[in-house]
Image: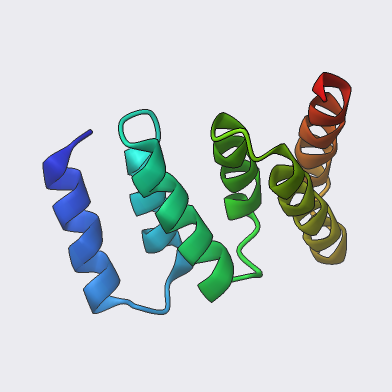
Length: 106
Protein backbone atom coordinates (compact mmCIF):
# COMPACT_ATOMS: atom_id res chain seq x y z
CA UNK A 1 0.00 0.00 0.00
CA UNK A 2 1.36 3.35 -1.00
CA UNK A 3 0.44 6.00 1.59
CA UNK A 4 1.51 8.83 -0.69
CA UNK A 5 -0.73 7.53 -3.47
CA UNK A 6 -3.64 7.21 -1.04
CA UNK A 7 -3.15 10.81 0.09
CA UNK A 8 -2.97 11.94 -3.52
CA UNK A 9 -6.20 10.10 -4.40
CA UNK A 10 -7.96 11.53 -1.36
CA UNK A 11 -6.89 14.99 -2.54
CA UNK A 12 -8.25 14.26 -6.02
CA UNK A 13 -11.54 13.16 -4.48
CA UNK A 14 -11.83 16.40 -2.52
CA UNK A 15 -11.04 18.40 -5.67
CA UNK A 16 -13.28 16.39 -8.00
CA UNK A 17 -16.01 14.74 -5.89
CA UNK A 18 -18.06 13.78 -8.96
CA UNK A 19 -15.35 11.75 -10.69
CA UNK A 20 -15.95 8.06 -9.95
CA UNK A 21 -12.47 7.04 -11.11
CA UNK A 22 -10.80 8.71 -8.14
CA UNK A 23 -12.96 6.76 -5.67
CA UNK A 24 -12.42 3.55 -7.63
CA UNK A 25 -8.66 4.08 -7.76
CA UNK A 26 -8.59 4.65 -4.00
CA UNK A 27 -10.51 1.41 -3.42
CA UNK A 28 -8.13 -0.48 -5.70
CA UNK A 29 -5.15 0.92 -3.82
CA UNK A 30 -6.34 -0.96 -0.75
CA UNK A 31 -6.81 -4.28 -2.58
CA UNK A 32 -4.26 -6.79 -1.39
CA UNK A 33 -3.39 -4.77 1.72
CA UNK A 34 -6.57 -3.98 3.60
CA UNK A 35 -9.46 -5.91 2.09
CA UNK A 36 -12.06 -4.57 4.52
CA UNK A 37 -11.11 -1.00 3.63
CA UNK A 38 -11.17 -1.89 -0.07
CA UNK A 39 -14.61 -3.44 0.34
CA UNK A 40 -15.91 -0.36 2.12
CA UNK A 41 -14.66 1.91 -0.66
CA UNK A 42 -15.89 -0.34 -3.47
CA UNK A 43 -19.35 -0.48 -1.91
CA UNK A 44 -19.28 3.30 -1.68
CA UNK A 45 -18.39 3.65 -5.36
CA UNK A 46 -21.20 1.26 -6.35
CA UNK A 47 -23.69 3.21 -4.24
CA UNK A 48 -22.59 6.69 -5.33
CA UNK A 49 -21.83 5.88 -8.98
CA UNK A 50 -23.97 2.87 -9.98
CA UNK A 51 -23.16 3.37 -13.68
CA UNK A 52 -19.40 3.09 -13.15
CA UNK A 53 -18.91 -0.36 -14.62
CA UNK A 54 -15.32 -1.20 -13.50
CA UNK A 55 -16.48 -1.32 -9.88
CA UNK A 56 -18.61 -4.43 -10.21
CA UNK A 57 -15.89 -6.97 -10.96
CA UNK A 58 -13.63 -5.93 -8.09
CA UNK A 59 -16.53 -5.51 -5.66
CA UNK A 60 -17.79 -9.02 -6.38
CA UNK A 61 -14.30 -10.53 -6.12
CA UNK A 62 -13.75 -8.81 -2.79
CA UNK A 63 -17.10 -10.07 -1.51
CA UNK A 64 -16.00 -13.59 -2.45
CA UNK A 65 -12.90 -13.15 -0.28
CA UNK A 66 -15.24 -12.38 2.63
CA UNK A 67 -17.25 -15.52 1.80
CA UNK A 68 -20.26 -13.46 0.72
CA UNK A 69 -20.90 -15.53 -2.39
CA UNK A 70 -24.62 -14.80 -2.71
CA UNK A 71 -24.01 -11.06 -2.52
CA UNK A 72 -21.15 -11.43 -5.02
CA UNK A 73 -23.48 -13.20 -7.45
CA UNK A 74 -25.93 -10.30 -7.18
CA UNK A 75 -23.14 -7.80 -7.83
CA UNK A 76 -21.97 -9.76 -10.88
CA UNK A 77 -25.55 -9.81 -12.17
CA UNK A 78 -25.89 -6.03 -11.75
CA UNK A 79 -22.59 -5.59 -13.56
CA UNK A 80 -23.68 -7.90 -16.36
CA UNK A 81 -26.91 -5.93 -16.83
CA UNK A 82 -24.98 -2.65 -16.84
CA UNK A 83 -22.40 -3.98 -19.33
CA UNK A 84 -25.22 -5.05 -21.63
CA UNK A 85 -26.87 -1.64 -21.29
CA UNK A 86 -23.56 0.13 -22.02
CA UNK A 87 -22.79 -2.34 -24.83
CA UNK A 88 -19.37 -3.03 -23.29
CA UNK A 89 -18.66 -6.51 -24.65
CA UNK A 90 -15.24 -6.93 -23.03
CA UNK A 91 -16.57 -6.19 -19.53
CA UNK A 92 -19.63 -8.31 -20.27
CA UNK A 93 -17.47 -11.34 -21.11
CA UNK A 94 -15.32 -10.86 -18.00
CA UNK A 95 -18.31 -10.47 -15.69
CA UNK A 96 -20.17 -13.44 -17.18
CA UNK A 97 -17.08 -15.63 -16.92
CA UNK A 98 -16.48 -14.68 -13.28
CA UNK A 99 -20.17 -15.19 -12.51
CA UNK A 100 -20.15 -18.65 -14.08
CA UNK A 101 -16.92 -19.58 -12.24
CA UNK A 102 -18.47 -18.60 -8.92
CA UNK A 103 -21.62 -20.60 -9.66
CA UNK A 104 -19.43 -23.60 -10.49
CA UNK A 105 -17.45 -23.24 -7.25
CA UNK A 106 -20.60 -22.97 -5.16
